[in-house]
Image 1 (cartoon, chains in turn red, green):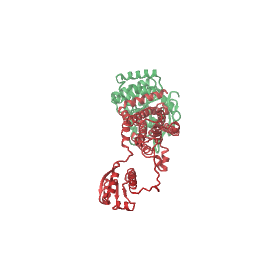
Image 2 (cartoon, chains in turn purple, yellow; image 1 turned 120 degrees about the horizontal axis):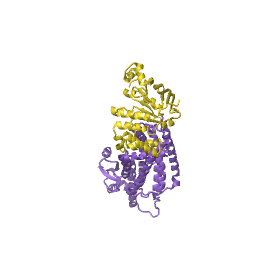
Image 3 (cartoon, chains in turn green, orange; image 1 turned 90 degrees about the horizontal axis):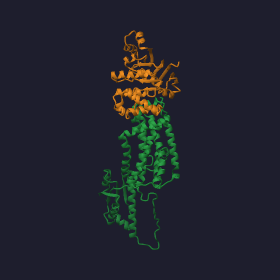
Image 4 (cartoon, chains in turn purple, yellow; image 1 turned 60 degrees about the vertical axis):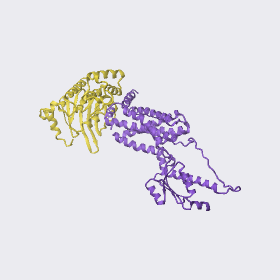
Length: 372
Length: 246
């Protein structure tokens, strides 16, 4: 214990002495948490629309007005032919082409049916999917409108229709910030913890100071604990800062218990720090450690369900994400903050994270060799 | 037997096909200043790292301060001090903080730490520098501080790997005064150097060539043996046979 005390005093002095790094550790998550959720917006707006109106009738104009006044579309081209409109897509000036056929109004009124043609630029999959969805539902609505107007009401034979009314639980207004902020905070805590721990031991290797430690009677677990504890405390501070920022800037207050969140984070930090320390025992230079951590953290974050749901990933990716500590953290963050989950709900996550923490830290102690 | 603090028999270290240290055998008496000489790449540092328990030997035996280098490395580490070629105190800690840290991890009590660090700083004449960061000190001061820190826990043996590399002649002389002082306090000194004037200060020297110990005697006997006037010439005589490059 006495030796650990000396290690901790030394580690803390070094952390507080390196003002630049300390400022980055504390300021980086705060600034990123303010910027990222504002930019990472799931809503698709400003879809560029090119229209080919071969009909020039009241009905076609009415339809175009309806589409453009929805707020999602911006009319950027009014072309004479499909070829010209496609040219706009190629130049990236249009995302969707809406073609209205020549006899649109006439056939609609006489034959009671008509076809519209929509072309979507699918380079940006999300934009294409959502844009196509939006325009379809606007046309659907327009269709209902003219049906009401034109069909003679038949008292005896009403058209059966099922109307769906949905309500969104846990996030009634589908506020994407409520969804993104907890995830982004999880990512930031992971970044800070992972990188700090990975780089630290390697820094001692590069400086040669680890040699002086290795030739002393320090126990391996003392040394690892001496590295783990300071960053663990720092990680918890960063998490607390993150909660305060999400409250001040986004008004997000966890629906569940903050204590429960912290209960999970203290365990999670042990796991991710253990991972960083394990990486550092394999590396000889800070550059190596940095690149390896980048590799893993990219995979952890992108496959952790921050931006894309794990449920919609292919089977192999789901299997991979089971070995991804970040996915559990993001999940728990959303469960407790948005849904108000309790200890019973996140118990399985907790048990898995405890396993991660034990395995990774043991591996780090084992792989740290005082004698080569 | 109890007067021998280093006993080394047929110690060998291979890295793949390369034999860094080839079957070296020697003994060092308690209180001796033992010079461990050799050209660059002769295997001095590797041999020293094995004796300190930092590197596992491939074969052979060695016993340091009564402990086996295979099984009792942690006990060895309690009883030795080591100053590596690369400066290895913490640049971002002050002189006093470095001393306190190393004294602490060697298990000294608070009272011992206080008195030892006090006397260390006084004997080095570093009273004014005690609260300065080590990174800001000139190399000569750093080296003297590193040596004193390496013996803060009063080990039986201290291993010094080229402690005076890159240091001016005056500081080198002061450094050797420190070595003599430590030796006077009963600490055995095991030192590598490239300076042949320093070899003259040793009680006995060994000269390594291509991983093997080619000579082991007191400086005056070596000079007689090779019938030359200085250690420089003894070294030149042996080292030019070396096959390994720099």
